[in-house]
Amino acid sequence: MLCYLNGQFVPRESASIPIEDRGFIFGDGVYEVWRVVNGRLFETERHLDRLAYGLRELRIESPDIAKIDVLAGVADRLLADNGLLDCESTLYLEVTRGVAPRTHQFPATPPKPTVFVMTNKFVPPDDVRARGAAAITATDIRWLRCDIKTIQLLPNVFAKQAAAERGAMEAIMIRDGFVTEGSHANVLGVIDGEIRTHPLNNLILPGITRAVVIDIARSLGIPVREDALTKDELSRLDECFLAGTTADVMPIVRIDERPVANGQPGPITTKLYREFRAYMDAACGAAHAGTPI
Ligand code: PDD
Image 1: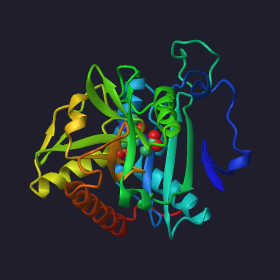
Image 2: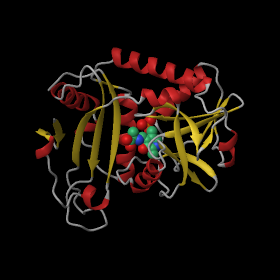
Image 3: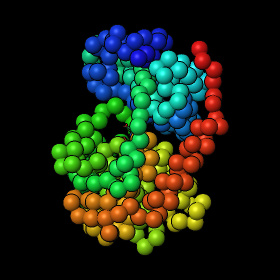
Image 4: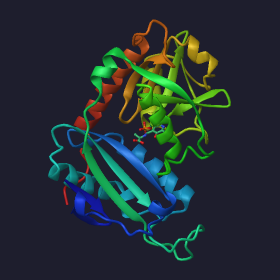
C-alpha cells in the first residue's frame, strides 16, 4: 500500500516522520477524511474549504495539497496504485505545522508543514443501517473550538471507546444539557416531522454530510431547524440519525439502552439515506477531476 508523505509516494511501512513533528508532540495540525466511490472523491471542494479554514485558524501556511488539482493528482495515483478504483474507500489527509524544537509557541521561522495522505478500503455498514444502530450519551468534554478539525481527538476517542464498551456505534455528546454531536459524526433528530440539529458554531464540526443532508431535506420540503436538542428531548424523538463521511445517514434506534420511538429506522431517516446515497453516487460518477501524476 502506497501513501503520500511530503511530496513522495512511499510504501506505508517505510513512511516515517521526525520525532519533533509538532503533530506528534502537540497535536498541532488538521485533517480531512473524504469518502471515495469508484476512485472519485465526494465533495472535494467543501472539504478543501474546511481544511483552508482550519489552516487559517491555526495559522499554518497552506501547502500545495490544499489546491484541488494537486490533491486530485495525489488521490488518483494512490487510489489507482492501491487498487481502489472499483470499490468504496476513504482518503485521509493530515497537515501539521511541521518539525521544530519543542517549544509551545509557534516556531519563529515557520517550518514547512508536514503533509500526509493515505487511502483505505471502506465497506459501508449497510447491515447495521438496515436494523439501525445503538448510541450512548456521554459528557462532551472537548475544548471550545470544535469547529476546527484538528488531529487532537482524545475526547472523541474516549467517547467512542465508551460506546464500544457498551456495544454501541456512537456516543452522542452532551454539553450543558444540549446535544452537540457524535464522536465522529453529526447528530440529527426528528420531532413532529421537523429535523433538529445543533447550529453551526464553535461547539460542533461543520460536517459536510450534515450540510448535504440538510440541503436534501429542505429540497424535499422537510423542515430543518438548527436549534440544539436537549438531552431530555432525546427520550421523545420520533427518529434520530447520524450524518458523517463514514456513517452516511445512519439511523440510531436505541439511546442508552432505550428504544427511539418503536426502535426501527424511521421513514424520514430512510428517505434521506436513499436520497443521499443517490446524490453521492451521481456526484462521484460525474466529477472526475485531475489526471494521474
Ligand atoms: N469525522 N463531527 C465530528 C466530531 C467528526 O469527527 C466528523 C467527521 C463529523 C462529520 O463530518 P463529515 O460529514 O464532514 O465527515 C462530525 C471523520 C469522518 C473522522 O474523524 O474519521
